[in-house]
Image (cartoon, rainbow, N blue to C red; front, side, top):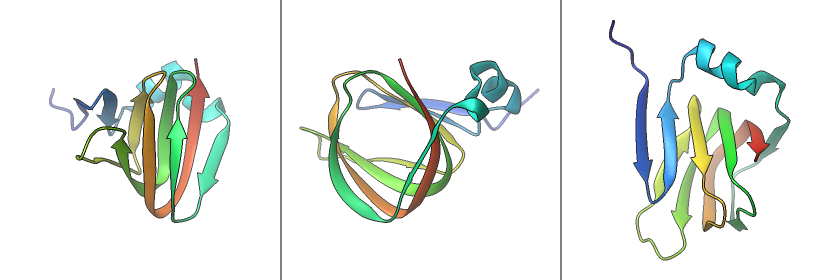
Amino acid sequence: MASSTAETEKSGIKIISNPTEAKLSDLGVRSWPKWGCPASKFPWTYSSRETCYLLKGKVKVYPDGSVEAVEIGAGDLVVFPKGMSCTWDVSETVDKHYQFE
């Protein structure tokens, strides 16, 4: 059975587009803490691996040393590797569930 779930990895960032509700349940995403921010641009360094699920918003993440942005948005399940430094360029207000490992 075909599914519209797609998994890609770019600059070390893993993105699962349209994860199934079953996958979200398995991970317990809905019980994770939430974080949000308005349109803004800021640097960020991941001190531990973060998995997040965007409920809404649109972001271009620029990993340090990379000229290419990784675009993420509502409905994406994203894994950022520990130690990654990047710049978040938020174009639409973000609301997400997140978990640090």
